[in-house]
Length: 479
Image (cartoon, rainbow, N blue to C red):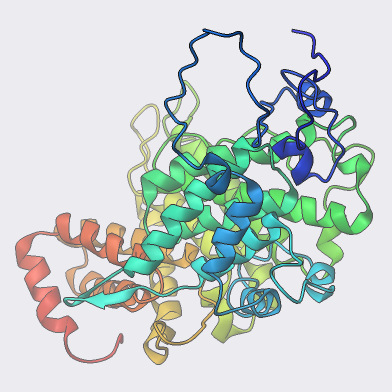
């Protein structure tokens, strides 16, 4: 349908033109901007109806103050009302201290730039981004010997999901908006909302794609150098979270598998950003790529071999070399807080665990013995790494602990539980499991996934072993 000029009384601009501060031509049924973007055109202050006399008009939602709750300015006001105890400067400082060390989706230049001094001067996508920071840094509360989200934080989370949907419906999209969604998706991962996180990551990928799809020229080519860096870091963060969620949920492929990340980059070095001081996230991106390669080889094997020993061995060598490089750049007492090491350790655990069960196509060889030795060494390495958790109070300190560590501790504990129940190396595996289970309980005051993983371990542990572990966990330190 061809848009026609407005013929009725003058009306205000549509919500999208107001949001983008553009002059609206008030065409009917859709203005020129909304027509070009193939988006619904919404006028919140409709003119007097011009329906012919006697025409019946049903308005079942007439009594709902739609314009008061659905427009971006009102959503912004609603978000600000829940951020009264902080301001933009404090929110960015909170991100730098508690999130940036392990998930640095902002460049140093962005963090050092001038930010709005008040919420009124900030855009709605920046306000939502700051809300995501505050939400992600909120701590659970202790309830009857366990941990759970505070009622206020659960309400904040549900509100953030509704705000995202409303702003999406209003046609809002930007790098900051996608990063806000990414932080809320990370909140779901960190606190064990597995189903919600699985849904959300696909929507985050689509939102990031839309930044280019609905541009007149490819997104990166229309950006300044500083904006390009923010765009690339955004995509690095998306790929890391997407690949992690796929690993956590089993054999299904990540949404971004087989795609160029970042997309639509032409005639430029995609990883020139690695030279920047904010290169910790791109390194984690490389670790997530190695993890995805391992996942592919284990769950999409060749037709002739269920466990492609040659391919997996090559990936193991690459991951091991990668870990060596990362450890040389990270102080020993900070290895626990490295997202790169958490992801690479997960890849090695997957390889060694599957290697202990691998049998050749002619059933004449096995690599179980060598894989078992490597698996024991890796689990011991993880156990030694998490012993430092005994020194921290994660519920009260803004400790920059990567939630990706929670999963690698859980995987090591799950593997050890299975081996202990099969009667393998009972004394050594009992010692390892006590350390790993206590580490998960130490993480729970910060990330609720620690609580969720502990419950999963309890379900998979025989009552006899669980009783023995419980009796011993109430005394002593991790060691």
